[in-house]
Length: 91
Image (tube, rainbow, N blue to C red):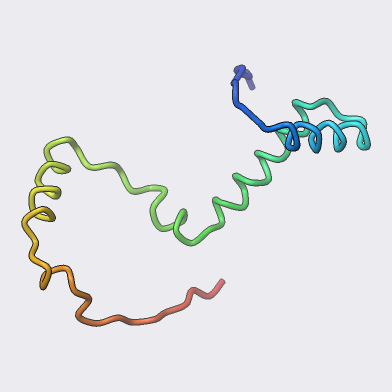
């Protein structure tokens, strides 16, 4: 798989922590960051919100304008929660 370079900013403490982990485990800084990102992405992909929305396509410009127009014209009464229901997801 081809790799691409990315730039991002970290504070001194984050850099120090990454260097320490890399040193202890005899890894490159890149490998530490890559593994951390891989673990984070895997965790987030298991999140129920992600699983519910990941395959949802974004609205077109026209659809977005239509939705925003409807929302902008809602009254305070329209925006009140009329009922709520609690549910849980089982694995």
